[in-house]
Amino acid sequence: ALSRLVSEGATRIAADMPLIDAPYRDWVEAARRLAELINRFNELKAADAAGLQGQVRTLQLNADARLKEWVFRHFTDLPSLPVAKAPVMVHHVPRYLAMRRSSGEDRIALVVFDGLALDQWVQIREDLSARVSEFSVDEGACFAWLPTLTSISRQALFSGLKPREFQSSMGTTAQEPSLWSKFWQENGLRKPEVTYQKGLKRSEQLAALEETLSRPTTKVAGIVVDMIDEIVHGAMLGKRGIAGQIRDWCETGFIEKLFTMLSQHGYHIYLTADHGNVDAEGIGRLSQGVVSELKGERVRAYRSEDLASSVPPEIDAFQFGKTGLPSDFLPLYAEGRGAFVPAGHQIVAHGGMSVEELIVPFVKIRMKKEENAT
Image (tube, rainbow, N blue to C red):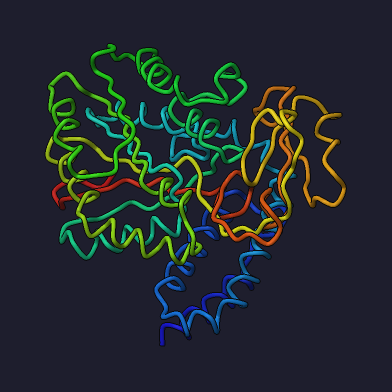
């Protein structure tokens, strides 16, 4: 029965794919529908999944190709769209949260699950729904920055800036705490009222975090949960395998404990991600030494057109840059679901512009019913 649901769902989504001039909201909705489908597909028994793999993969490839066309035409419009109702891109998130504080949400926690794809959020949401009777969520999604790499998109997320505005630190996340603090100080908070913590993944770490969060002075918390990204970079069995590892992680109760703790201390909880992840296949290594400024499995960045053009013609890749990026930062993306690893190697990766990498969750979490919906 679940197999039939997945097959019928794939057919419906394929028939309803956004057109080239669709508003961005149509892509957000399509990405969310696709995520629900992928999560259901990952829940199937291996034999059932094998029978549907072709249909689901065709849908994913077609969605990615359609999104690529849309991105080439419309991505440049997204960074400057208004954020009052919800962030359109991840760098809008701090500004949106500042508006929420102005509307009476005194304490806010932004929980960033590094590398969490929408389908993996669906899995976590379903797990929390089963565990926590009063759990509810305001669903939403927004666009990551391109390229979908942590040092670019997560830094944009915490700073509220476009990548070219933190050009000197684009290759590292070391500036995140100070950029996060700077944003909030520019929006009326004092330094001790803002906290940032990364590297969270296990329940044993929560006591130390609670010490900071429980201080009456703490008003805004930025929290990075690293587990998904860690699982992704060690994945041997694709995204279906990752779903099994996420299931095991959920069993530890870490996520439930984190959200319960935040809720008990009066925080309004927002969850998002800096990018997602995607099943990819090697199309060949780029052995150009230190020519590439920034190396990712699905993207490379170069300092000039000449350097970017030095990629061998047999490597199926394309350029897309400019929007929000420094003029001397030219990303080169692997085509389709390709990755710059040995030909034929199957990996889970990010950096590219597939639906599963580019459109990420942005949701408000409620752990108890008495919180009024806003």
